Length: 135
Image 1 (cartoon, rainbow, N blue to C red):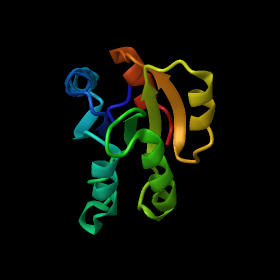
Image 2 (cartoon, rainbow, N blue to C red):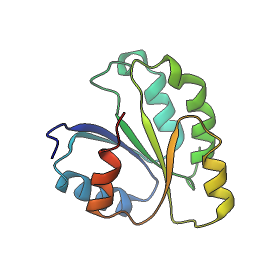
Image 3 (cartoon, one colour):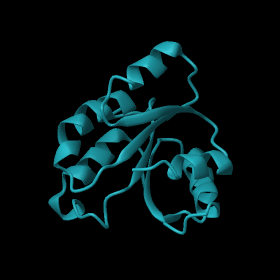
Image 4 (spheres, one colour):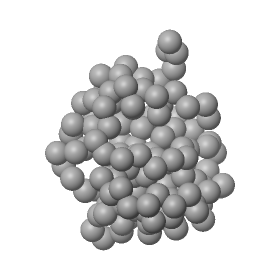
């Protein structure tokens, strides 16, 4: 098993989901830092801040909810796709949703930055698997 640890970003407006996901991610022993945002705008503002564009600060993986206030997941992806090539490291994004709508799954594939679409809830083994994907 790899001893590598990852910076993870959770973008989800549900406080309970954020809390439980953070606990499960920490239980995998594969995370070094978990950053959370309650909407896509907070996250985009973080990525646009020059001080945050350092390799050790940026996440390796983003778990992104679709349905959020202020800036939803789709709007975040539109904005992120414009900047992710300029970031100093590759960041994998997993769209995470309780939606099993085939059109949402297909739409997620249209974004270059999205690695996969994952249906909630996510257990510890699934997080381990997603974090172990080669970068």
